[in-house]
Image (cartoon, rainbow, N blue to C red; front, top):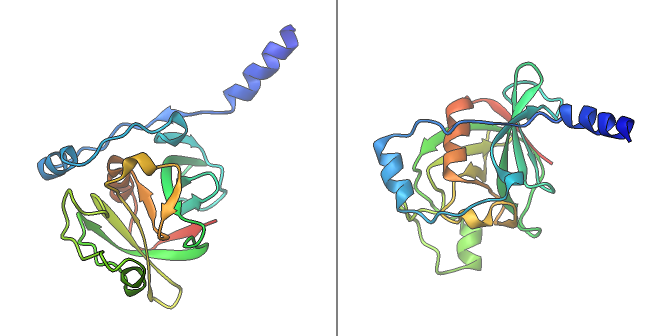
Length: 192
């Protein structure tokens, strides 16, 4: 029995999860986020500093669609893990992209394909009613074309941990602010 307890202790010691403090936010961020719906997410979708499970180079963003997690790879084989909502099975995508642009409280301009599916959707100015949330990271393909996929905040935080979007990767607003503050244009993005 003693060996079993010791063995379990060794296994758990290898699982280093440390919470990551919330980033500082501007007065506008605080005011607009206070107007947005709030929701608790399960502990498995909280933001943690962990041992890097991806093996990718520092500065890389890796999205694990099955686990509904996004990893931002840090030096020294560490990563920050965030819970996300991913594309519904019909709209999800996998592959690689480059984050070329990022924006605070971006406007939302639904793509033509989305408007065709849902004629009621209309462009929305950045702010608390915008489905893109507090920040957006814009993904481009190898030829430099906008993929129309984004990593962005959400005004539906209760959907973190689910496959619900039209292909974009949604994050809690405080998490997307944290990622936005860390990532630089040119970052490699891998969606698995």
